[in-house]
Image (cartoon, rainbow, N blue to C red; front, top):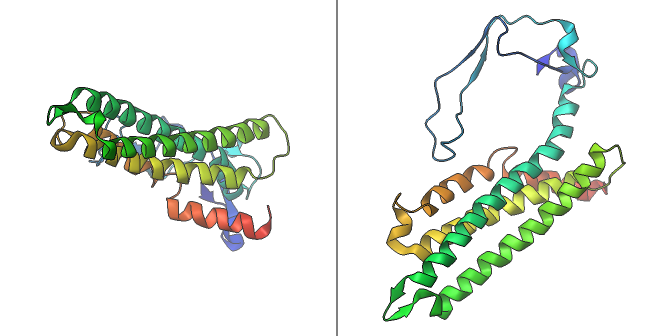
Length: 219
């Protein structure tokens, strides 16, 4: 994104394609992160980069609008990522409590832990259905249909699924007890990976602002 007309504010921003091979494009050092360490993150540095006008995406001044419209679709992919992390944590926790014995009984026999598993699965299924709904709306819009409620649904799916993933992975760590806290078992990584889904593509606080605005204007 680049400002092509400073006098127009947000309507003076345009979108461009920048190639990695373009002169002046470089990258910072890898970031040291809490989670998603399997996905490298670096700063993109643009210094005296010159590109032809043919690289512009859409019309001049539509960059901000393009970015917001893109988020309606990409937020759903974050919801899907959160679902996968949460499902992995739930599956592992179920397997663990079935095998782990305490006081001569499998952990799965204790009602308190059964309640935790039920709540985890309930949150996950609710998040899955909301994500599928948003994905269906996204597909319709991508195919050219006029869709009402996509912005609300995508924000809701991302927000709810990521919050659910954070809760589910935290409970998975709890169910494994001390083992859940060590890196020999996968749930501690899942909990760290889940955290970013509450942050990128717009924090969950921003998602709630987006949803409220959609409600108030009647989308």
